[in-house]
Length: 93
Image 1 (cartoon, one colour):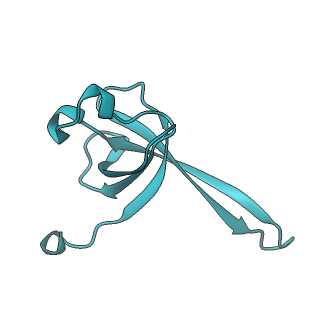
Image 2 (tube, helix red, strand yellow):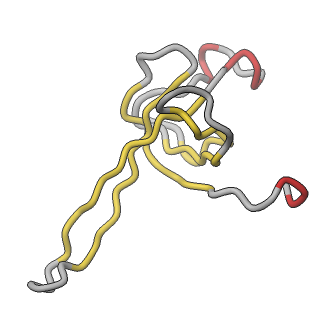
């Protein structure tokens, strides 16, 4: 991966798997409010490319809602998709 340059790697929870070869992953972080000092939640959703057949996963091993995954930046694959699945961090119960 070093010869391809540094690519951003993120970790989040799958919130939707209804699309073909795509999952929607949400990252939640807490930020301190600049004026009031209280912590507030900020959420961002990413469309991540996930092709189970190419990765050698069966239907049982496919991404499901609730899975925690790691994904990385890649070239634009569609209008909204420029992230690619890397690995499972934790499977949904």
